[in-house]
Length: 141
Image 1 (cartoon, rainbow, N blue to C red):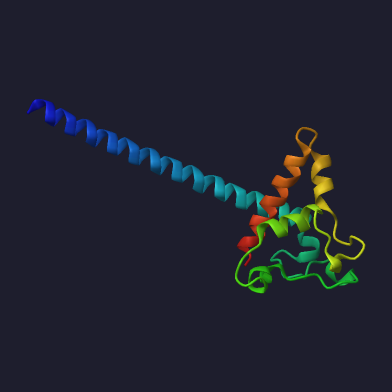
Image 2 (tube, rainbow, N blue to C red; image 1 turned 90 degrees about the vertical axis):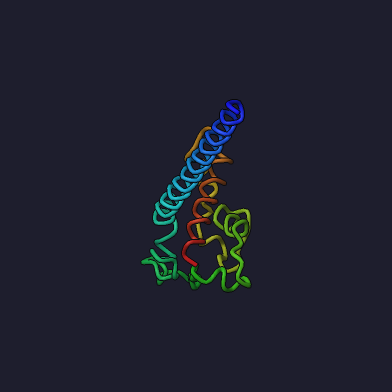
């Protein structure tokens, strides 16, 4: 009898510890997601808002001086059948995808700038910044 009571206590303690650990992991994910969004917003404001505007509507202070209409980034998901294409947006940001409306690269190819900013692992850094910005733009939808 004592052995089964002890076994039940161990199972209960194991379950409680497991749940506590899962809650801890979930909080880390939430914090890192929040930090990613904050970083994304900071990068977006630094690199994108002059043309796309602070809210992504294409009305930044530089937009009126461009020869092309700056797109409203808040409509990306709507114009893509309800799906936000993160990879496509990343490739536009970092220059892997040429956008006809950008003409002769009126939109800066941030990938090269991101790479030059970081000496160690420049490709990873460029892709990471593009991903962080793309994920922030997703929150504007």
